[in-house]
Amino acid sequence: MNWIWEERKNAINQWRHRLSFATASLVFDDPFAASRLDHYPYEERWQTIGAIGKVVILVVHTPLVLDRSTGEETGRIISARKATAHERRIYAEGDF
Image (cartoon, rainbow, N blue to C red; front, side, top):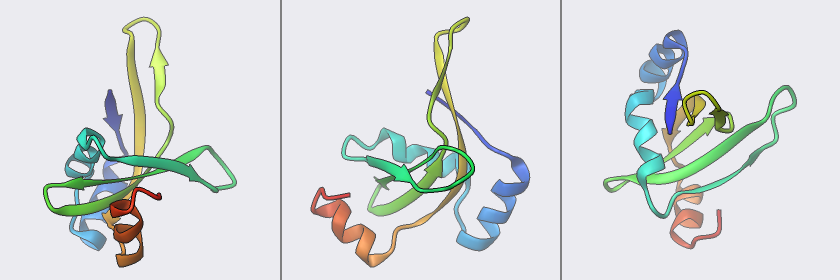
């Protein structure tokens, strides 16, 4: 699974949330990570919540797309931030 992003958005995200997209992509390694559809009107987006160490992160991203020539899946990270208290609670309860 590969993750790509726009460097400009990554820089803005690091400034706003002190979180790089490279670090945020580690959320997908969490065996307890959970995803749900993000109701964004212009493209299909998903929200994935998971832990990186002891910090719970919410990542907004596009769905993975399979490249048939390489067999690899690639998605695009749009934003990432620390989860809110409410989001951390529903992650801990497994109810995301």
